[in-house]
Image 1 (tube, rainbow, N blue to C red):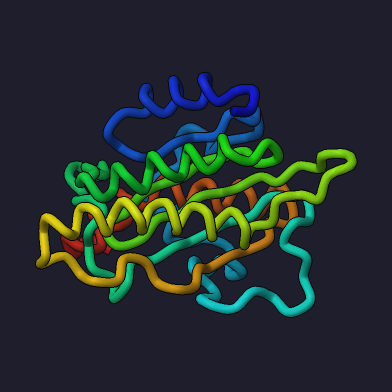
Image 2 (image 1 turned 135 degrees about the vertical axis):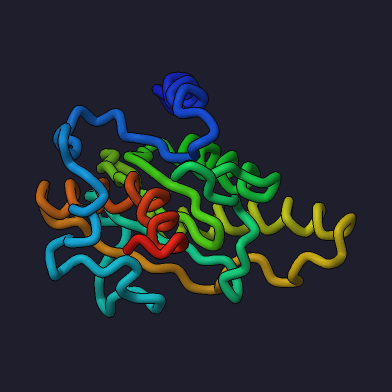
Length: 207
């Protein structure tokens, strides 16, 4: 288990039932006074998720840096939570995803979780990959393979008791974006952390 794991768990618990976990990297956060009206007017290069597929051709996904990841539930079935008062209230299935996300970060010493948010039918997170001398780095694909394998295994155990649950849990592919600079990092953090509020406003017809 890598250094900082216990701290991350304490922060996660402190974040509470919202399942929105701000990062611990000391970088700028959305300024006070920012409102939900801003999140729907992100720079034109922000589209989340932008690509379901297939990784960018020729790109090495073990390259140190920060990555915005989006994983959807198969057929966008809302299994993970419900949104109440702009806050995600996780189901048992949402809790297992959250737990395995944190455990997968602990499993790989060269990864760190910057922030995440679990939504009804998908979840977003920003993953940081660092360089470890003398070792081949963890790739985003390796990370997602482990996360999805562990989560799906536990989901299938639950499904044995509740046969009405969908047979397939997560979509086969996931969305990814390589975060190029601080401006993009700020925008993606803002998108992730304000996602539940934006979701509720859209659902209730206010956007």
